[in-house]
Image 1: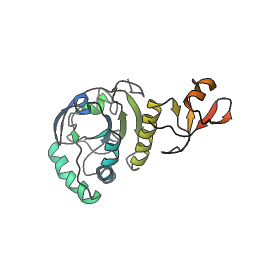
Image 2: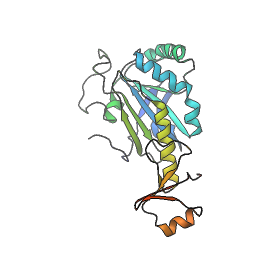
Image 3: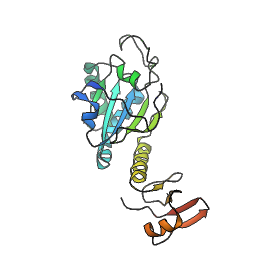
Image 4: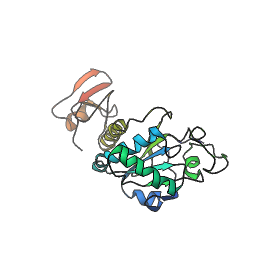
Length: 220
């Protein structure tokens, strides 16, 4: 069965470039982003890993840990990361899982559960579905799933924007409108009555329609 938003993110144990981990233990009380790659030494993924290394401090500001996964061995990962660091211009300080058994890719519905074999003999094309991004909250629930084609580099600035939105809307009873970014007005939840809103937002709000009220972004 495919994973969906708000499903419990499956726990797993894995070998990574920074040693063995248990996913839940590794997360601790943090948020996490798990982003997957079909194979090492692929050009688009090389740019993605490099960019993630460059903007890792932005994720850390949001209490979010980065975890990569690719269908190749630790030895191949370590060689690949030399290219990643050279191309991206930053050291890779987050772990990269060696999913040689395809176990985690299957656990996260990127392969069918009955997919046979290991990483050996597989190509990027046969692993094309391993191009997903999962954002997991401290409650271990999946907050976001994005899947990209191999030829299209992922927009991790957009992932940061979504994390900002999710963290804000989790803390406050608001939603974020189209193309929202930090500092923009937000939408008051329809579950809040006007009387309740007066207590929360004494400076008032803008009523666009009977069901759409916008207000300055609250602090959280």
